[in-house]
Length: 139
View 1 (tube, rainbow, N blue to C red):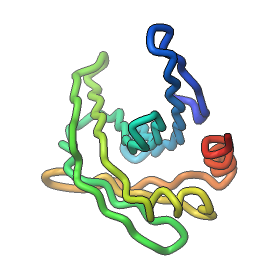
View 2: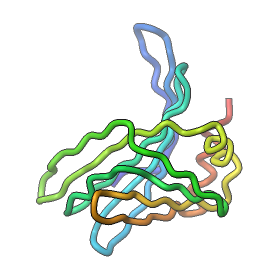
View 3: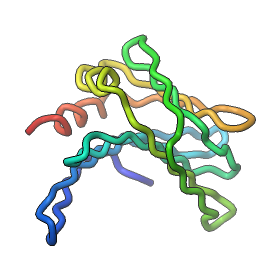
View 4: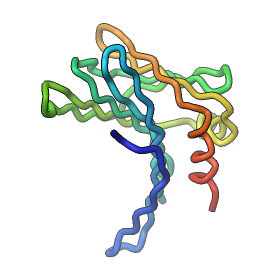
């Protein structure tokens, strides 16, 4: 299971740093795991979603609800893989607007919907994990 956390990676060749935030969630109907995260580098901020499930969703977009406001983003890039035990993983990347980034900074409630070709799945980020967002944007 992926853990919610903030990590900082430093490229030993270029000296650049990349900061990553992972907010893990889970759902057990059917068994699936998901996370969303932010990656901050010199090029800006990128949002990603990760889904581990026993059936393909073929994620096309994400809708993020932050404190009642909804932001919908189309997937820019995806990676899909068959994992062990008949499970699959899907990772998608999105370009968040500056308004969405600002909303993350002051979020009190976050939920999101991964929309695929034929259906969607909703997830909620637990409130205790929201403190990680503050850590991510500090410094």
